[in-house]
Image 1 (cartoon, rainbow, N blue to C red):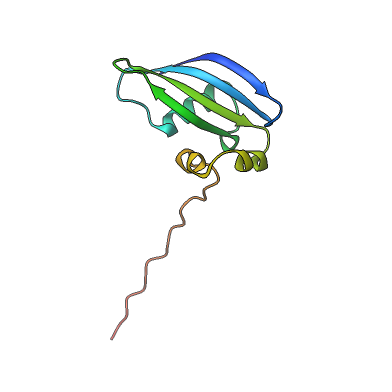
Image 2: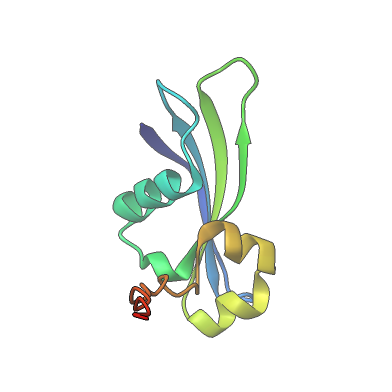
Length: 107
């Protein structure tokens, strides 16, 4: 998967960095998690403070345009981004707890 930054700008009002990038791929369209991992690796940002706000695949091509927002504080991230964006990016979600197996009743 190739990653190329098209535009990167600071948004002081919302306390975030807005990144527009192009991702090229050879196999199936990458998942949001795979795209997040690539962006975090290339930009060196905190994964808990970054969301992919939009991913637009190009028709007939193995490429897509991605818009990502990198925040400076988790409070700002939760205040600005919509719930469905946070959910699809897996931001702020706890890891699922493993439940202890239920004890069998002996009669």
